[in-house]
Length: 250
Ligand code: PEP
Image (cartoon, rainbow, N blue to C red):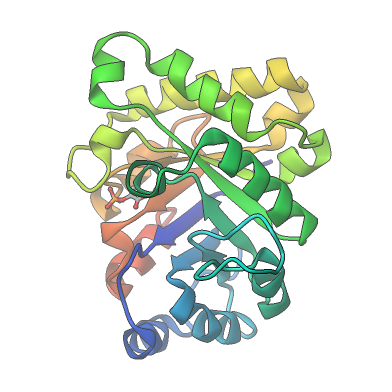
């Protein structure tokens, strides 16, 4: 049985004061069980999140990290420091990081190893462009991204990790993949994991859909067999909207 996840991704939004205000608004209102609520936030906001999560049923995610623990890497964030702070997850391979910061499959694989070594879990993003989908290349592209991202990761570690399928054409565009389109690709990813590992690992790994998920469409997406949750940008920024998303079962 895979516990559903609703993971916010604030991207480069909210300062520590705004983070505090958001946390005050959701305090005492998160479901105690049945769903894992996660907020992914900019590095400067993570201290507030990890303190809050000590008393509330909220898991925390960084939106990126480097693959070395320490050293002369000006401007980067250490996975060891994130782990020491109490972070649970790190989002890696988001299409914005691939597109604007040149992050490669190899970087993402190194980051996944560094995150697991530091006792956190990666949320590994993948997804195709509209051109790739229209050319019939989406499955090949996405399964290739996954194969490269998980190289050298043990079955046990992968089973605990999270994958997020985010078609690039649906991110921040208001254009959601239909629940059937999302289910189809998430199923393909699960089959790819089964072929790279085994049926048990594929059955355990949680695979999210991301791309304009909001309170109005979350229920339908979550009703699909292989979809274990959502990675949510825009609709995770407002406390009421985030609470509506995490309470999708009600
Ligand atoms: C995202 O940030 O990963 C995302 C899916 O954004 P949005 O929900 O705004 O499309």
